[in-house]
Length: 333
Image (tube, helix red, strand yellow):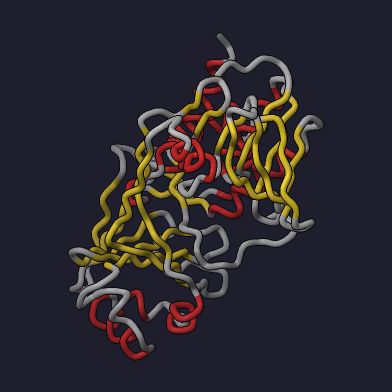
């Protein structure tokens, strides 16, 4: 794909899409961002499906490149290491680095996404089109196919150039693969996840606020990442089927038994456990493989649309942000 000064479509206003729109706008491009969701600045996501993210050095470098290093700081909680909680009640801190300055940062996905959208929207040459779902692309006709969900009608815009940042379930990737422009496959894990909460007490964290907390239990685990407001976002990773699985948790009593047996110290800190478990959706996880990340000079895939990965090692967002940095660097050439 060759980008010359002019207009660029970005499909997806998630983390990488909003950051990329900002970087392109700073270079003088006219950027239109199409997003199937409603504007998160007006209707915050309360679906209970957002895993807290771990921001590392390469992700921070992309934010610095966009001039957001200081603005993002209030959202970040430094984590010095992993606090591993044993079934016997012991806790062991495994440091990430050799000095206290070597940290990674916990950040709430929705808060960071909103900040990035606000920063991009402040640029006069960025336009967001929320509730516009991408249906695919027709390379032969040079058209990007969209559905205006509010007006309930389909329409087309010129395809070239379009950058797809529409996530692991990318409609653009699927459309290109169906047309034979690339080969892609998705491999889902046999595990799912569910988001839960460890609330604050009088505004204070109930666990070490500078650690990523992990309760490893063989083929399943609970984690908790700190938030600036004193809460922790906890995530239960559990097999879909089996003795200890989501399929086996059909009643509140079974959920309570699992946590009492496997995570008793965490359970004592989670008064909303049963209500949240019943209300929050069960999320899927998987990896996306592509033989290429572009279709000629028309479409480029970035972030999860190109290479979604399971969340266990904090790579997804950092890889996506690094993609944005790479595109910006290439425009220097």
